[in-house]
Amino acid sequence: MQTWSRHWAIENGYPNYFDKLWQAVKTYYSAGKPYPLPPHFLHPSLNFEKILGEMVALSHWMTPAPWGNTLRQAACDGDAPRHLDFPNPERYGPAVDVRDQLSYLTNELAKHMRGLCQELDRDAEPSRKFAELLDGLRGGFDVGIYNLNYDTVALTAWPDAYTGFGPTGSFETMSMHQRQNWGFIYHLHGSVHNSLNRAFGDQIEWRPDLSGQFFEGHYSTDERSDYQSFPTTTLIAGGFKLDQLLVEPFHSYHAALVRHIYEADAILIGGYGFGDVHVNRALHNRVDDSTKTRPPVMILDYANECTEPMASRYDLWAHEVRRTLKTDGHFFRQPAGTPPFKLATEGAFEVAQMHRAALWHGGFTEAVSRLDSILAWLSGEDDKVLIPRTR
Image (cartoon, rainbow, N blue to C red; front, side, top):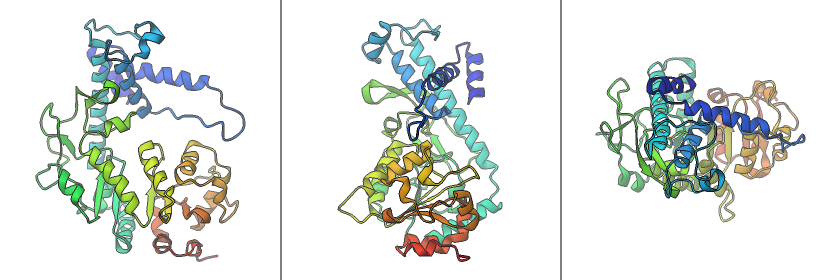
């Protein structure tokens, strides 16, 4: 992403807004000294999605009055932020330039991911294990997948899953909302198969051939909350995700996500960083609903030799897991005090019995080694089914 941002700046002769914001946020984070005791030493992570979100905020800041960020008047007396140069003299020039780089970066991200997916080895062991795991889950449950990734890995394992798009590539809005069956993979944040319907189009289509023609996004914008303008994109990346989700197919996907979480008898979460508030809240509201039986929730994660047990883990991931599932880390007591890496090598789980939550630390595809136990536990059997057979 940093390489792409430099290329845009050189090609257009403008400052590298992505890099300027990256350095500014890095300085800001380093200036905040966390408390020495847990859990107060949590620290936000600096990544490209954070900066893409700040680019949206900067473009809104640089939109002239009365439509831009009104705080600019109070903070800078209506001027541009210090240390940032905006050479475009046009009234809306600075805002357009920031959004142009933002659009370029999201387009490059889509192309990059599409290229990686074309190199995916479907016969490699991880791909085969993924398919085996998914086939096993489908044998025990009606399965629906909400994929936050852009890639084709899940579709490779389940090629006939319903995506919300019809045979012609158009999004089937009404059919999707009226659909009673599960058997779907919905790409909540977009897919490498997404393309605009034409150059500078405004509708997303599904194109099955990744080597075919794709129309990426553009800096022509759509206004969302507080008159913030967002470039047209085929993927959702960066901050302000609730605003980004307001266009189709993402709006329908998110509405279906909330409904399906309430319908689900069991929830399996794999490879998720718990960094999306709109997803976390949907899960949180479900387990917080006192009028319904709390479903079993299992998380498939990966632990290394340094990973702490949940009772003594205070990083952002563990913090968000506890907050989302409404379970203090100390409820993960079975087996008590065993390091997650040791649990992973033994094929064991960390379990919060009171909250019907379980953590697998052995890696996503490696969970297939305990598939029978996972299916039994998700079906409502006692926690004893998760104890390794060697014990």
